[in-house]
Length: 132
Image 1: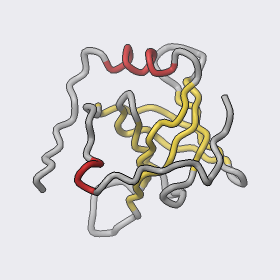
Image 2: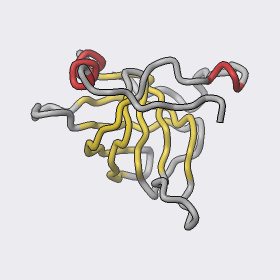
Image 3: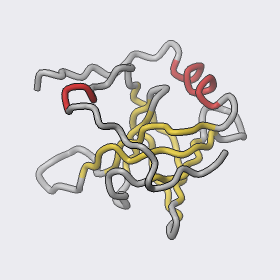
């Protein structure tokens, strides 16, 4: 698995075209993250086969890439990959929502997407009202 360069192509779709196309599922999974100068941990709050939301106070800038490793289910082998930060939620005293960042998967370890899909099979998706 090769690390994408910071200059790699990013989505240029209009804002209305960036809506979620795949269901997200509420999960509680541990994740470790690496960037050029940092190693830190967080928790995956929601997951789909195309990305995830990491609850963490240590957020990276939108457009940056992070290497991650997710512990899924009973397997001792984590799913590893690279993701692009697509959005960030900063800490707010007026909100109960956790701070963190949304990642879009760029690359997953062999069989990673299949393992994620199998893990999510049978779970109820989170409902998002796109009109809000």
